[in-house]
Image 1 (cartoon, rainbow, N blue to C red):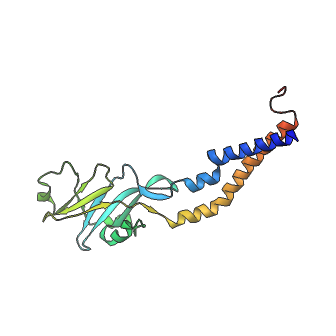
Image 2: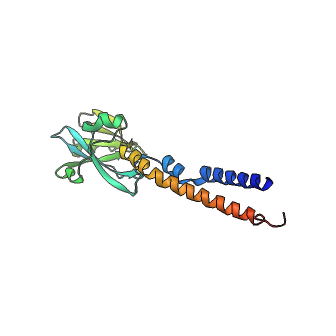
Image 3: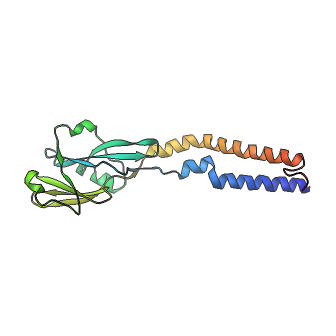
Length: 193
């Protein structure tokens, strides 16, 4: 009876250790599920006067891709979506063709003559995930934040991968239980105690 209690205590301790310190299921569900601007995000803005909009181009990090992905979207067209933390309607990177680049300045070092050469410029914060657009009449728009959103496919992928993660956890716990039971059946891990 004493041996059975020791085996059960060992099995429960091992299972608790695996669940708390590295179980596949926990890792799958606690990993970041947000798409967000990378650091640095290589922000570039383009003036789209025909649309009365600004095309935003930046690098995005995804929970499902190792490398940043280049993204582009129209700022005003997607403003209500991005303010609610939703995914903007992305456009192809070739949408920047025939559009002029908006000069981008650090908020603390805006040159005084920037509007002599352009009808619009932008000021970005030091973290460069936030920017303000300034038109020639000194009317500023913003601040605007680059999108951070949770993708609906993230939860679908998690649900689909959960059975595999649970099977992996069960294999690890089962293997540990087998090892501990075999060790106790052979006189314990440390003979002589």
